[in-house]
Image (tube, rainbow, N blue to C red; front, side, top):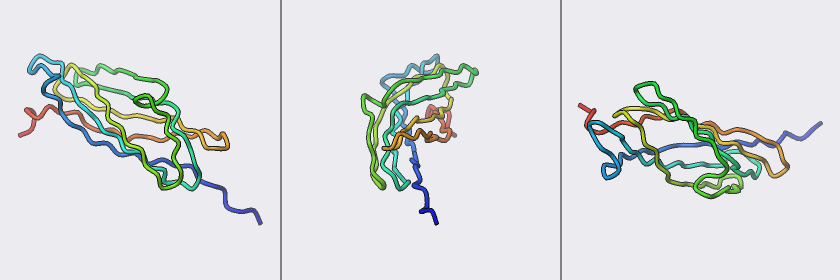
Length: 128
């Protein structure tokens, strides 16, 4: 009988904060900080290597942001470990969204992706 195969998995969550000092309502742009928590929920050590963000505003403008690392780091996470970072983005409208994918690699060189579910970017003045 073969032993169960090790599972590589990162879980991601995001918190968003509006940045009034970097924004210019009502004409825009609107700036938002986002804090991403990445937890290794698998049972094998793995590294976050690169990122791909899709930033969309209410006018339908889409910005694809790709690059190595996150804020200069390519964290290696053992099972159960977590890495958190904060970055920011700017959009032309008072409302938009982001979604992303992290490209990751296990310690034995097997690639996998970790999805970041879509989240909203909302100027607080839009809330009723």
